Image (cartoon, rainbow, N blue to C red; front, side, top):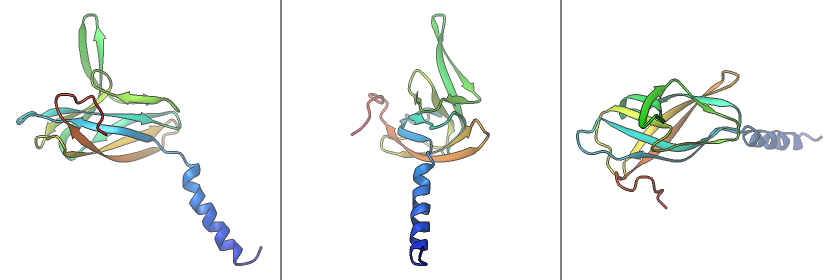
Length: 151
């Protein structure tokens, strides 16, 4: 191999490396807008991990506290509770949505208005203990019709 081809080969390998390393995918993130004085809201999104992993942490500069929550029926009552982690099975779409798994943003520093963008950092831990932080910008959708994605 000539000396001119070696740098080109190394550059091609370097550029191909990110494609070979799959990352956790986040799709359609959004936050429910709030009314004045409201101190909590929910964040929703679709998460797909290429490997078995868990969502183990969440934070936002807009919230004093951010938690992973589940909602489920217990008898005839809907119950909501914070959980330490949310399983992300390899290759499976996990949807955080109203009435199910979601992120609660508590002790809000300000009202979240329709059209605002809320920064959220997700901490994902793989089965082998490696962690990655994914920063997202979630647009605020109106209180009514919040389940409908914008086009």
